[in-house]
Length: 339
Image (cartoon, rainbow, N blue to C red; front, top):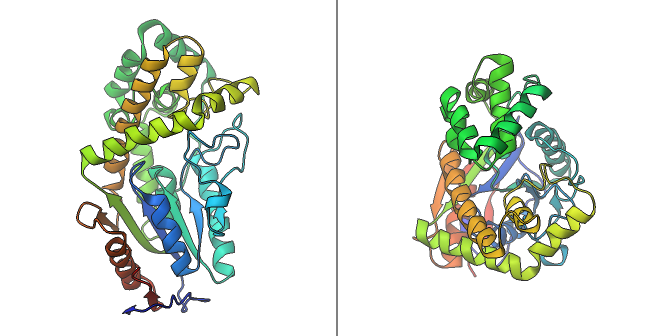
């Protein structure tokens, strides 16, 4: 039930349901998820769970666009700054931590609200993927790393495309670590990683949660302009110094953290592989490509309802539209302010 009211009614509890409700807001980088998530969290008595694979790392603030604590408006944010950048934090780790966090939030009568853009992480939680250990081969990884150094990232990526085109399509050639991992899975199992992941997804016939999945989108050129502006802002805020600090702390340049988007490009500049202008140009290009892959991933998510920001230019209209979607999914009445 939707009412236009000056009073926000925040539900203290949820009607009986065999599954806890879970609100999810996804979309490409720079589309505007953060500001909207704060407004929704306030209206719904929700606590936010970061759905970004890199915000789990301490000291990676600017490059992951973490919202500073003082700008979170008192709303609890979870799964941020929970491990060191020298550590590895996988999708399976995220799934387990997120499930625990959702139970905790729900036990306190609040709404768990995942906000982020890492498709695999978010979908793994929503549909309870069964992650399997596909084995490892250190010698094979070393051979592939040497191959990439000798023949280049594109040649390594072509190897993956030959045996697992679906994974190759999702991975950028510069994402050497994940390209090698996909090749390693094929080497050790004889099956493409994409097929194994598809089987894991197929295991989840029904979500463990009562889901409301909302995706934000906008016209591609407008999004790309926002991405370019965001990169400029990150550089002004001190992204280069942030990466320098991580390197000075002994975080390996081959680590998951420093191979992340926004970090590997600056590492290349700091190690002399690229000049500054080339690194910035590469970062903007890679971020635009990443946004395109995010959209591609989200378009295949079940039950996701898209909201086009180009058709809802005013914040009030956007808020009203999304509240309507939520009210149609969850078993409590929602009253909100249209201001």
